[in-house]
Length: 198
Image (spheres, helix red, strand yellow):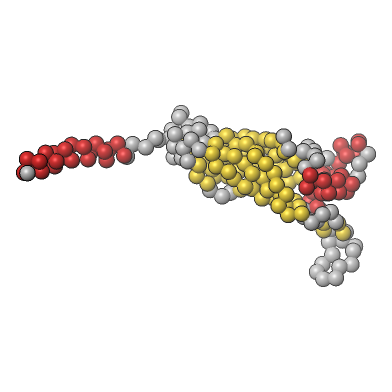
């Protein structure tokens, strides 16, 4: 009995430090080993839809102050974020420009910290509210000449987009996307762009 106890204690003293030492050896990230995760657009969803309407600053309102106001449009952008590394990676920020038919409308993003496990893919939902007046200013300023060349008024183009968005009958684009990733002392930036429907 005493020999078994001595043998058991000896085995424990031999193996336990080895197990503890091995458990502390997690895959470490270095700048040389770090592979920037891949960001892809899975889909776009219409989250909130109020149709198309607009009233100018000269319109008499029942309550509140008059102004250039129009129907907001809520969209959700769902991204797949694949971590090819053998260790977890943190997504620190993700930003991109929303465009309809190659007309930039707004820049949106997420500053929420998200950890992606080693070798796994997470999904991130980024919500965007597009205001009709802001879209009018963006499309009119940045794309006004292109619309003018086509003989299309800005409000006519916006009405087409706002009324046809539920069917995705035109491309919704994610442009100039950048996602910042960190793991230990390594940092990487993934550039991405996409169009939906594909």
